[in-house]
Structures are given as C-alpha cells and as structure tokens.
Amino acid sequence: MPYETYSGVNVRLRYVLKVTVSRNYGGSIVEYQDFMMEVGIEDCLHIEFEYNKSKYHLKDVIIGKIYFLLVRIKIKNMDLEIRRRESTGSGANTHVETETLAKYELMDGAPVRGESIPIRLFLSPYELTPTHRNINNKFSVKYYLNLVLVDEEDRRYFKQQEITIYRLQDS
Figure: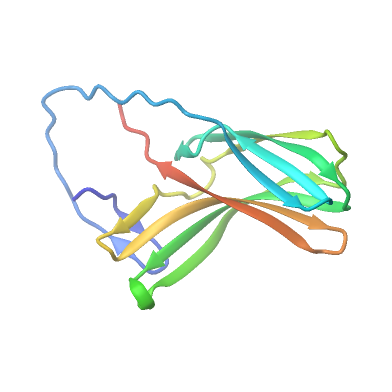
C-alpha cells in the first residue's frame, strides 16, 4: 500500500507493511521557490505575504514576511492559521470537515504603509499528518495557511493557500 496510516475525524486508515531494502536510497534533489500570496481591497488595503516554500515536513518551520503596500483601513489584528480539511466520500456524498489546528497572532494594532512583519512558525508543536490526496477515491487530507485580518469594525478579510505536509525520510 502506498499510503501512511491516518486517524482523522471521519476516517481511519491502517495497515502494516514490511520492506527489506538491499541498497541505500539516493534521495531527490529539490529546489524550493518562494511563494507570494496577496490580500487586497481595492484602493483600501494591499498586503503581500511571502513565504519560503509550499511543501513542509512535519517538523519544519514556515518562514516568511508580510509587506504592507497600502493601508487605508484600520486593522485591529492579524493571525496566521493552519487549517486541516478532511474530505470523505465522493461526488454528491462528499463530506468536508475543516479544523483549525494552529492560530498564530502576527500583529496586534494598526500597521503603516511600508511596514514588514517577519514570520517564523514552527510546525513541530502541532499534531499534523502528511497530506493525503484522493486515497482510493474515498478521502483526502489537505492543509492550508489562512491569513486573517480583522478591522476595527470586526470585519474579517482572509486569504487561504494550500500547503503540502510530508514525513521526512529517515536516513
């Protein structure tokens, strides 16, 4: 079986596999690109969220920066959330369960134009599992970074970006 054991809200996938390897695994050469996410309200707010990659291992660190390019509304606070979306079933019988696993406060108070906020979010304290995509057309588990801004009138603005979580290979 090509999948890991998983225990979620609606799904439990278990099996045992024994493998004997007769030679070392050479590994893959991977080069990561920076990713950029933009949040904006026309003529009121423009923010860029830059982070170092879109694939993270379970004990990795999300490193990034938020740039305020235009700020004409009064922002009260800003959070970065890690959300897990578990989908079960298929077609019209699909059931989706979304859970917020982490909520990290990035800012409290109003930013000014030109300001930048560094981000360093360690993943190891959170109970994450690897991303599972369409396992036997029955279920999938996906993770998202959700950037949430709240203004002084308690209106919420957000932008969500999918990330991939994987288990680091033992060497």
